[in-house]
Each structure stands twice: as structure tokens, then as C-alpha cells.
Image 1: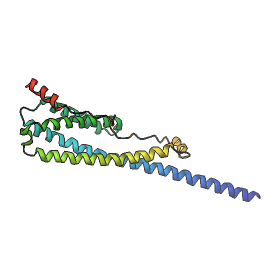
Image 2: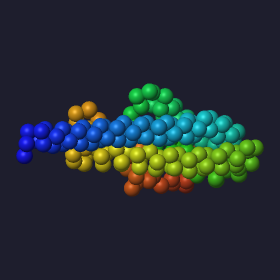
Image 3: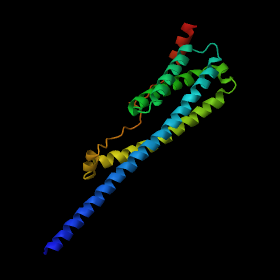
Image 4: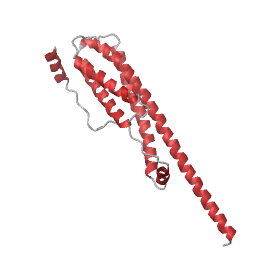
Length: 201
């Protein structure tokens, strides 16, 4: 092989490697942007739920006999969740835990509210309950999209030889947005809540 031929081969190989490296880097940029954009959509839906909670609590509070401790629990959980999502550098794992706590509190409140006819009769309560259910569905859809983008990014980071590019540019894994323990759900004991309500009345 002549010197020129060898030079051409080296140039072609280096050009190919450079193009692959650039493509791999651009893929990471695109995937990180998708993760960031889909997280913004999750945040929008979470804020929508946060905005609904005060109106829902106010509607339920009109039933004077309703257990106030349950309402206070919902309000505290909403405050904690809102404080975390308001941060620009929101910790996805911490947000997930706070939102799970809010979901649990809302479930307890609605389960107990079903035992109070006066709550069901409050003007606007049923519409708020339906809007909350719709919001929960929107959160679930946004979460699925976000987690799919996280999975694509993390898979690329773990795959060779893309892992070398990720390491060179400090591209880190993204966190999934999911309950801390999705396999375990608290079962609301309405009877226990009603007994406590009567004791505190």
C-alpha cells in the first residue's frame, strides 16, 4: 500500500469516527431535551392537581361533621408537594414521594367523604371530584411519556460504545418518576376513620 493510500485510509477512518462521535453526542443532547420537556409536562399536570386541592378541601369542609384531621393532612401534603415542584432543580425522587403522599391523603379524604351524604350534596363537589379524576389520568399519561424518555436516555448511557461519549461529557442517568413502592398501596380503612371521627366529635 502506498503512503497516500495509507493516509487516505487513516483520514477516512478518523472522519468516520468523528462523525459517529458527533452523532452520538447529538443523540444525548436530543434525549436530554426530551426528558426535560416531558418533565415540564408532568409538572404542568401536577400543578393542575395542586390548584384543585384547595377548592376540593373547601367543598368538603362545608360538611361541619367531617373529620378535620383528614383535611389538614391533605393540605399539608399539598403544601409539601408544591414546595418541591416549585424548585428549578426539583429532585424527581423527592417529588414522586411527596406526590404519592398527596395521592394517599386525597384517596383517604374521598373514601371518607363517600360516607357523608352532606358532602355529596355540596354544590360543585361532584364536578371537582370528576376534574380531579381527569387530572390523575393526565398525570399518569405524562408520567408514562417522561419515564419512556428516561428509559431511552439511560439505555443509551449504559450501551457501549455510547457510554464513552456519555462519560466524556458527564451525561448522567435520569431518575424515573414513580411511587417509592408501586407494588404497595395503602388500603383505606373507612371504618377506622369514622370511629376516630366520632371519638373526636
